[in-house]
Length: 182
Image (cartoon, rainbow, N blue to C red; front, side, top):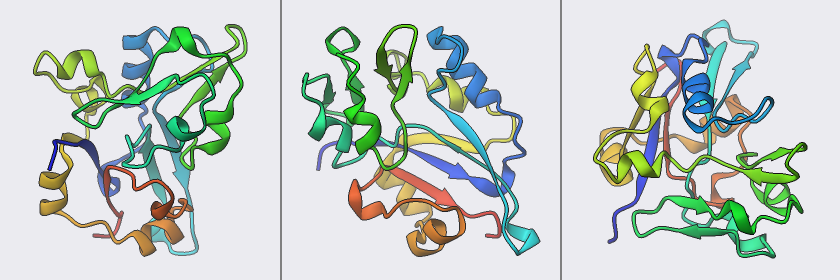
């Protein structure tokens, strides 16, 4: 099997500082309002499940953005990272509508979309994505998804219900999520 990179998100250690989001924004010099990694607060009836979850592009096995883009903007590298050729983007926002995780972001000033590239330029140099490097709580990890999954399996039924996430079968995301109460 070919290498596929992914993220591990340990929700129980996230305290909502948004350092991951700001490190990403700063690294990629994204304009105001364009966040490739977002930290979302969640609440439920159970006080043990209140907290934060950080999400970006999940570099899915079946990327919906790539399937619908009429300009052929998206491609999947041999290491599984879904990248965008920003120059080809026509700003139609089809990728935003198709992505179950709302990963692509539209910049109204530029009239184009963009998304997390997992800091592919860093990975190519043997480094980690900026969001992972910057997280003070150790919430984010990066690596080959099969190794991350060997360490912890995501209970998708629980995660989807508790955190209001879409059905993982739509795109088969390359992310491992450890719920807050594990």
